[in-house]
Image 1: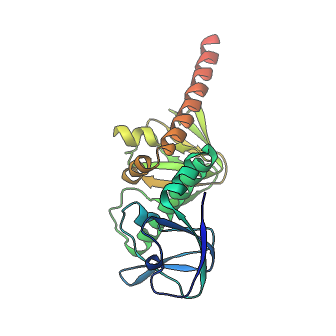
Image 2: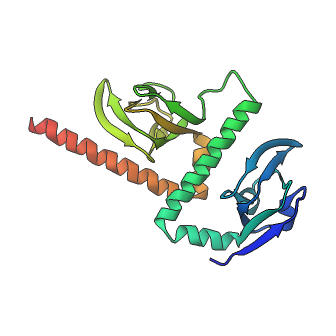
Image 3: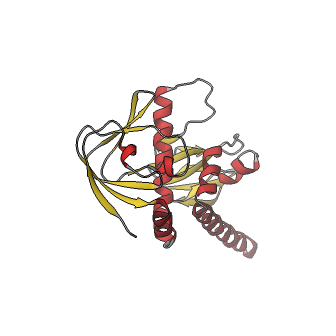
Length: 233
């Protein structure tokens, strides 16, 4: 993947220094995200800037108060690099999910509303805590960032959710109520994503759908094994 590293002086909008089809990986320095003249976030080394703009999405202004070093790459080269390796696809999908969760947390901080249907963003769940409940309305998809959880139906354990797996998508997509309860087996952290945003992510990054299918296949296999054991008894 061909890249170009540049050192940029302090300025009011770094995007003015980037081609409209360039992404930037921050190597050193800090970049502040400004929306409607309000500082809403800060990017640091390791973060990617320009994602919104290269895909034609609204983007805020990026301010650098000190010199920053940025590694630049063309959008198409970057996506070819990501898609050439399943491991990179998985990590980039997780990066996007994390970004979405971050902005959800920021949005809830600046724009609190009493009628929000379900909390979104990062959530810490204690051992024994309920992540989703059987019979609840479903408008959120989850990814387990760390920890593990048991899946139960009518009080019977029928499966598990492991770190990195996506769950809760089926009911969110079908519009039906939750068919199972998910309970933290240990202290865990999860990322809650509104259904609409998750659908948009799948459209932009089909690799997320592959991960989801892999998760569902593993659970179906586990259920089949349990059913076989029950019949044998």
